[in-house]
Image (cartoon, rainbow, N blue to C red; front, side):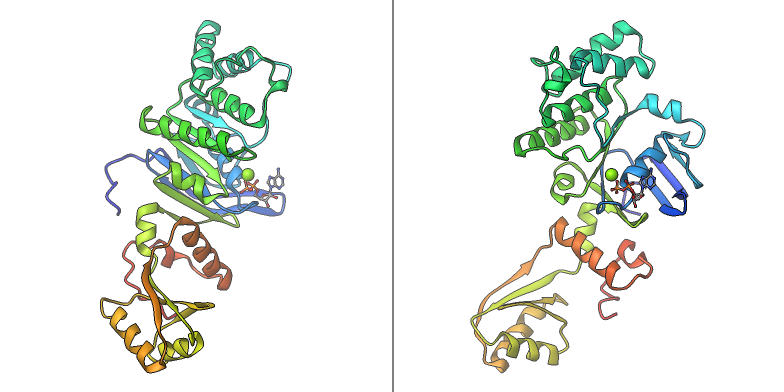
Length: 332
Ligand SMILES: Nc1ncnc2c1ncn2[C@@H]1O[C@H](COP(=O)(O)OP(=O)(O)O)[C@@H](O)[C@H]1O
Ligand SMILES: [Mg+2]
């Protein structure tokens, strides 16, 4: 539908469900993820880590089915894990080991022979910026270095797909930048696919071209970021010197839906004539317009808007996923 029909998906899921006892952590998850960089977004508890563990075959699903690189997540977890690099959310490192031993060990666990694992361990530790510190025990590492070591473990067997669960969690600005840059490089130069989760929009925006949004165990959006931004109604932002409530009234009388933040008003951009009509409204309301501009939503705005809609009315989310969005649901 969005011009990517030619690439075979690396990950699929059909009606995937996961219960922890009576608790529904994933419900009716349907996915089709093409190669590239994909960000999995959602608030804490949304189900991001659970989804990753299901895809890796690390936990059993309750219902539905899924594939990763064509392998069945229910029965071929071993094959999946040998082709996928997984950077888990929590510290999976042994503090007593040096990074070089830890990474070599990770390689051997996925079936590499010791010589090959050792060679690769040196390579990937350099790649993640730990060349100088590779013989040091992990217990002496900072959070940033530990995250980098986890990434090295995930990359040791040169996987086609990298799954990173909150890779920037707990990192300071510098370490975060480096992590994001390394992930970006893995996609652009290494031509690998990256699936990364985060609850921070900026991280995802810096690395990914697509997002999957999870809310309470359900996928609410899966799209290219570019298309998503285009789908959100453009708004015109109007700053006035005074008389904002008079202006609001006048605009509403004229049929606009107005969102007001103090002296700043926003209306949906209906068409090219909207600007003219806003100016006419200002004259009628006897209000001076200070500034008027088209407001471009960033990913954060989009996320909040979608969450707001979901929170406001728990209903079908098809309106968030439709490709052709012509504003037909604007007045609902
Ligand atoms: N092992 C578990 N046992 C019971 N409940 C769990 C377990 N792991 C996660 N959950 C619950 O499942 C939901 C999704 O958790 P999780 O996948 O960790 O979300 P996220 O990674 O998006 O923060 C949460 O409500 C969480 O409390
Ligand atoms: Mg998590």
